[in-house]
Image (cartoon, rainbow, N blue to C red):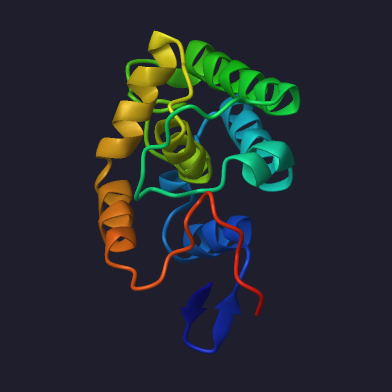
Length: 164
């Protein structure tokens, strides 16, 4: 949730768009129309899809979990993500480290996937490992993961959530 004065924004993609409106859209989205269209589509797909991955591999950047068996639906979603990453890097990555060369909204949207792949030791091809390393070294992600380590209450990824 983002609080900006009287404005409250509670959706991840809406938060990105709000920040882009406040600063510069070029900080968030590629300038090239074709690249921007693909980046927006990938961000929207991340936003609305991959429910099996989210359910079976909950986010937990405090642990590394061995021996997780990936279901066929989760494997299919991982394959889709890796295909998207490969297409973005091949078409628009250029010499940059991120999906569209420079750090942007789509990398922000996929950062939680990167942490899940690390937590659950998901095997990835070398191009994806290099991208993941770049994401994990980005100052915003480093700060985010460090702050997560300090959270006083975290649900263990293998334990059911307590009833509220």
